[in-house]
Length: 190
Image 1 (cartoon, rainbow, N blue to C red):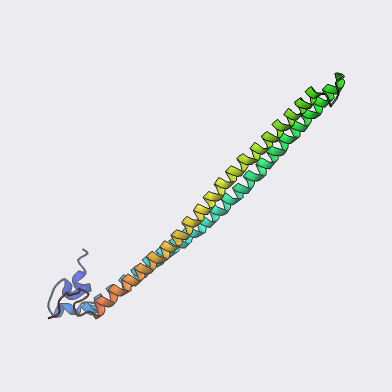
Image 2 (cartoon, rainbow, N blue to C red):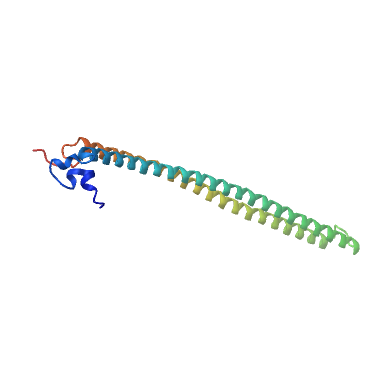
């Protein structure tokens, strides 16, 4: 306490009729208090709403980053797959050249089996690379969806909480101003 209360709030600190004539009086203090409470309520409500908006914007931004990462994963896996196929083609070409140099033909059953094995191994490696890239991409896309949902939920919660704070504060202020009991409800009417 500052010691200035008797001057500011009159009867609240000293009591009696003379005290109510403080600098702003009891009615003025009550009205100023109600105005400050109303302003605080509105500020708290708009703060909750603003927080929800910011969280949604942040969620959308993070989701876009995750979607870009998914696209990068797919592209990278396609490059790896193409490299696997290229290496398999090089190995088949070398096997064919070695078979021809040794006097064997490209139609020799052993050469055909070796070439088929090289082709299968290259394609298996390429498809595995694409599968792995697709899995990483889907994981990023699911994270993007989840992040976007979290942002929407935060926005809804912000609007709901902010609106509840504002409406609750308005209701409380109206009860205090217009209720004969000063805002206290009485369960029985006498």
